[in-house]
Image 1: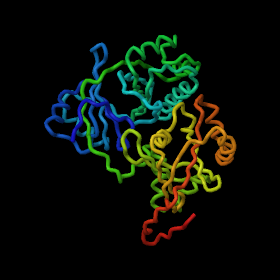
Image 2: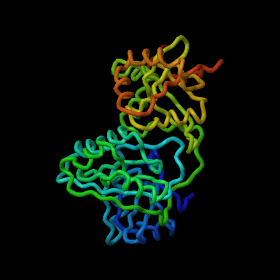
Image 3: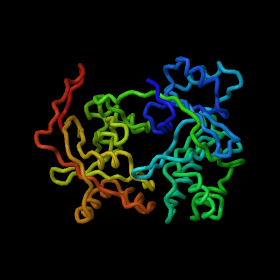
Length: 369
């Protein structure tokens, strides 16, 4: 089933590559409308600038090679390949009324520099004391050739973005000193933004599979989760010397099951988690999910059980924060770099919540924690 005229899900867990075409790509849309939908294509979205002068088409692919092969079949279509590096999304985001796409170019290929530039933007956002309320989200893509960054930002309206730029006094979306470091970042040869509206889009649409679990889209976290699951916790329970568990929540938007790995502490028979998001200005997605639906599934070592999750109260937090910083001292650093109060989450086992373990693969013994 194909959905029409909806914005792309930038954080879609199956996206490997984003291919950007600097045109409306009418021939591509015509081909897709005829039913020629490539197996590896997730979405194809065309935007038109608010002044009507520019077009850009944003395509999401499970496999970049398949996307490049498909698009080379269209004369005049040239695509630049990107991968999503970092995202920031506010709490309970509204429907966007404007998409702002930036083009940042560097004087040569340097993947580390691309990421440092994005990290500098995140530091500037974290230091912003009065962020504009019109900003909804920011998704930062890095080109695979190491020369460009493409930030894709969602705003409530074009006027809200225009007002943020005017308020900053420095052609940025914020007024803090961190934005000057972004503006003066070495090696940037060109940068500029364009405000867009949705022109048309086509995307896969299917009912969520309730029994399918989708692991974190962050590569190193997904690798950690996979090792944890495949070895029943023998590999992964201790991660870099610290205890970790697997948390599965229900996506507040998609309805899909989302699984991630997190450091934990123990408080009697309860487990404690830190919603740090590495000190980012926004809460992690898993925390927002459990606020919407506190019924979660936990795996600690080989043991799996259902549980209820809730934020720690103000009275509970001080000793539990001390517990968690003793395990991972960087939590104090994360709190110092963000104006967001980092929540603690208490996991309380449900009565009769034990999930019977599946048989271990041949030759692999399971061990209870």
